[in-house]
Image (tube, rainbow, N blue to C red; front, side, top):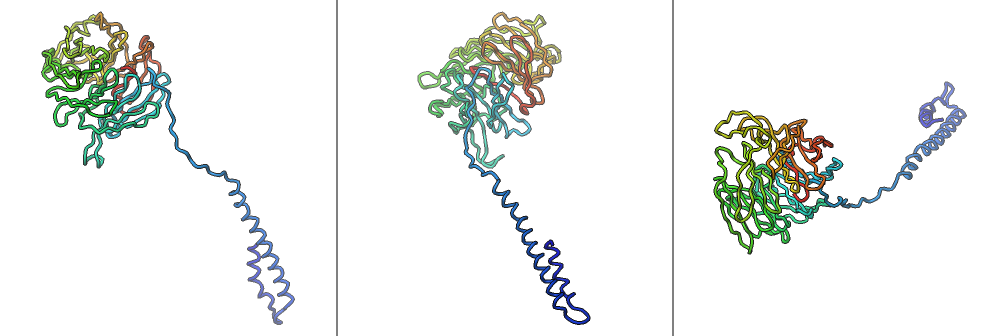
Length: 425
């Protein structure tokens, strides 16, 4: 008899009473039946409660977690860094570590607000210049230059800077010497200057004031050049523990045909190809006494007419444009430029084609049509080079440089892909 029946049995015991009075025999029989039911109920409960105990005994013993760090493989020519400025939520800027051969995201580090990144030429470290505030969006400002281990993505040194340029990310906001011994940080606190950071000691060895000039285009191990508002260059030699500054004469008119600050530099020897808004290319040998050669026209290299500058602002033709609008493959001397059809003041418009140009012959090698407009082009520096472009949705497109064929696409790698950094670049 179930336990519920036993409980009910206690309620019927008064039935031992009859019209003739109390019937002891009936009472005794009912009591014995109820007692038996109670015993059976206890047995049933015991069987029921034993099941959870057995289940608990069978549960696995939870092992204590141990923290560890997975190491990435060594840096290769096709392992690149990709800058994502995350424009709609710029405090969350980031740097992606990408295996371009597999189209695989390997890791990510923070780049805070309008950060910049540069990589040691031999892949021994990479550096991110960033700015944070003690109360999130206000409070005490802190400018930092963390150094990252490229295999663990852990910070090996978190240097505090005296300042940095808090502007949209540009490659030449942050630069590095050919041997990786110095990092150059462009700053505007309180005026235009470049902080020289010694990577061996993680200290600022000197700050070079450069009024009216900006950015850092490195050459060799002991110097860099800045571009100035008058259309000339400021050259900084760092030999003998001091900074010697020389200036060139203006070679372009900033009002009529300015040059893109995103123009590429071949860091080992400082050779730079400054590209103007109209499409003129100024080959320049950067040094303590920089030499600027006569310009040549991208459009004429392609068999077209030279493009007019600000004197004919509404003339429509093929023009360079975008953000990181050009890239240089050092060994071949081939220059890759994003091009679009537009008027003079469309220098920020994404490119619909990549024009590959031979910097030695000043001739067009080919035109690569893009499936979607791109504001960025990058290249690796090996014998089997890859090209990189982006689109407005944050996709990273990976191309074979030699064939001009698209190999793969990483969908929505980020929000605002600005530029890539490859080994030795």
